[in-house]
Amino acid sequence: MSEVYQKLKKILSEKFVSNDLYMRHAYSRNVDPVLQGITEYVVRPKDAKEISEILKVANGENIPVIPRGAGCCEFGGSKPIGDGGIVLDMKRMENIINLDEENLLVTVEAGISWSKLNEYLSQFGLYTGCMGPGSGLTASVGGGISHHSVGGGGCAKYGACTNQLVSLEVVLPTGEIIETGSQANKFSKFPFNRFGNGPDLASLFCGDNGCFGVKTKVTLQVFPRPPYANYKTFLLPRKSVETSAKIFTEIRQKGVDVYDAIYIMDLLVSVGCQYGLFPLWDNLKRKRGVFFYVIEANSEVELEEKTKQLDNILLSNKAEELGPEIADGNFAKWHYCQQGHYLFAHNLWGVVPGFEPLDAECHTPINFYPGILKDLDQWDMEHSEDMKKILDITGLRPITGSGPIILVDGNNVELTCGFTSFASYVNGKNYDIIREINLKLWKSILERVTKHGVQWYMMGAMMSRLMVEIGAYPKEYYDFLKKIKKTLDPKFILSRGKFNF
Image (cartoon, one colour):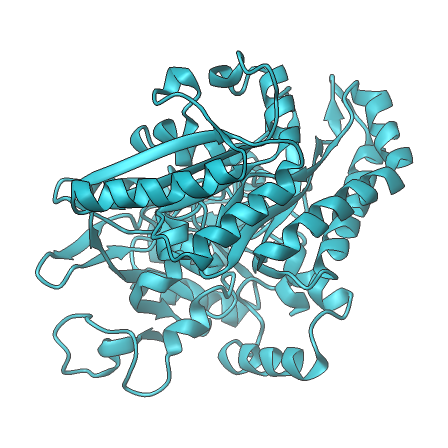
């Protein structure tokens, strides 16, 4: 066994260290089909002290460390860039440390999933507001903070999950352990406020994609779940993209307090019904775009007024209300009452075996996205020759577009832009050409969307490097980012390669 393996085993015990080939390959992937490198070691620490010791070993040996939450990200955020390194699996750290019902705060270990946390909170009539990312059944809280995650429900009302962040415990790349916010005062007995005691250092680790530190404890605001809710689904008229943007805008301009508002574009409805993904819409004569909303209220009067306001907006835009039950096509009820938000973000993934996403997630103003979607159609036509090469091998052409379009903070929506394709291994044979085309097209489509001026929030390995490579960051901004990285992580140990660090 190598000297590094022996050092890691001494910190964690042999049970929680592995250099097994199968284990290393499993931890070098997430849901996108592009393999970028194979890790050398996988470790599963139990607390911040063990992580600190692991990082000290990594610095001494100049070995990169890749933090990994649940590993369900689409953009290479939790896998190695290049061979070697240590993958730091955080899933052992999934304990609830404290629920402060009086101050509406919860402190958890960063490896806990959003679903486990919210299942616990539901016993007290509470929830986290934003329910994390769309993959929140397994996605970790630490991963959500690292990506400014949205998508798991509640985004129109609460915004990204980092909005409710109060305090962090973080292991810095060189092994020091710090706490942020109120806990920067050593006399503070418990976390209660994020802002103060100097600059908001918690923000440094929000959206950092695991580059500036390893989050080990997270304190979040929690909220009483309102006792009343309503949820309705509507079929949109033709030109549903433009109509949906008009509806989103009216909701915001009229100040309606909506928990979720989501548009599912025509293509997704049509293809999804064709492959049996949306059985509740099988009987729709017109497979057009669908719009649904969810609202919460503290009284029946408040709920009735919000429902009336939203229905007026939808119906005045010639939307057709579907029935009240899930069997009637009421997707919104399934989404809210049966936790469908944790299942529905997967779009067309796996519609046939091996069909996987090559995309990324961004925010853009409401009035921008119809133009972006139109340009995605144009991009698809421009790359039809490469698409046909994949069609000839697999029998199915890649599908370009966006997943569900979700209303988030302010006058913005979340777009999941890209295309769905196949991994290079098809019907028992490996096709290098598929991998080459996938990578070329993935970079091409993300560059195209970047030039619309969007804000990428889940950067991962793909977007963080592409932003640098195409010169999207102003030089002064990127130089400043790199100075922060070098100050915190002089050997570029943590998440080496992201942002081309």
